[in-house]
Image (cartoon, rainbow, N blue to C red; front, side, top):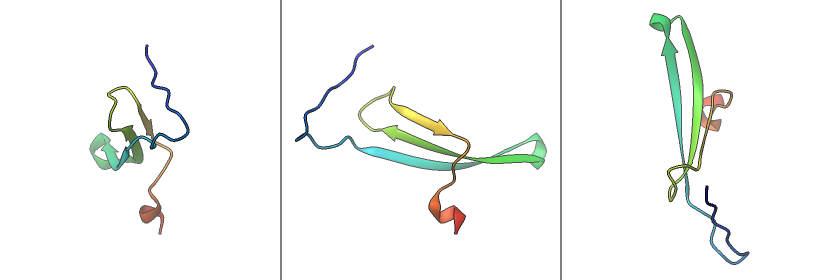
Length: 58
């Protein structure tokens, strides 16, 4: 395992996000998911099935 430590003057990492509407069981069950990923790492990501994007909530 490795980590990158940056100083206070370093720019923050670039993050990307995607939202998903996932449907299961022929449409009987569905949920929303949010994925947040750090662009410069294959291992720095977060997936949540309890959050919705702000535009979806309006």
